[in-house]
Length: 109
Length: 114
Image (cartoon, rainbow over all chains, first blue to last red; front, side, top):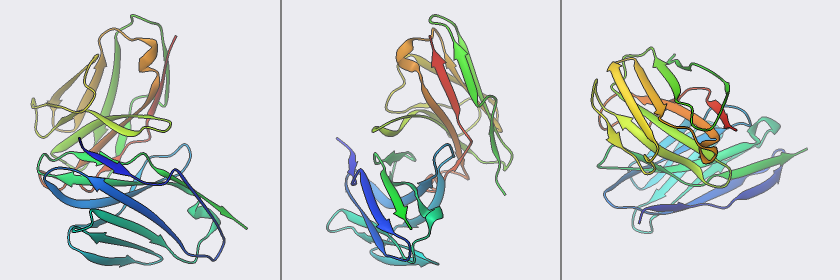
């Protein structure tokens, strides 16, 4: 079957760096997306990796290794507002996204 | 900015009722999606549509149907609501085929079936 695995919860303090890992098992894999969802809010798109390597967007970076079926989201200089759930999602040749179960990030002062 | 709106934020229905959830996007996107989100299960795809009057089943279509008569509007229908359909329902859209990796979500409808 198709599945993505990510940790259920991660905690960190303000100013720190945190990495949220995602391993996937999907057929017809094209790329890996990351979404952020605050409590009570809608998921919002953060990044997409179609090629191996690191993509940087401000404080957030995303990494993909196709050979390892693995990716991660790296959040630097953590802020309280980064407390949210983060989802990885795999896209493929069916134009559907398969979402992971989400990682809840709690940032403490 | 892309805007995806959903008809209700909160909805309470009785078992057996027919329920309509409406979604509208204003960016001329070709693809539209319906998900349900439950704690610990992430987002699960119910149905999606890549064009007017076209639909594809997602991973959990049982008990649901959809309608897309106009490009901007995608409706989710619960033919006979059941308590196990109590959930958060999220609508999303993406630009066109091949761009589903970047989806824009509506605020969600929290449906309670009693």
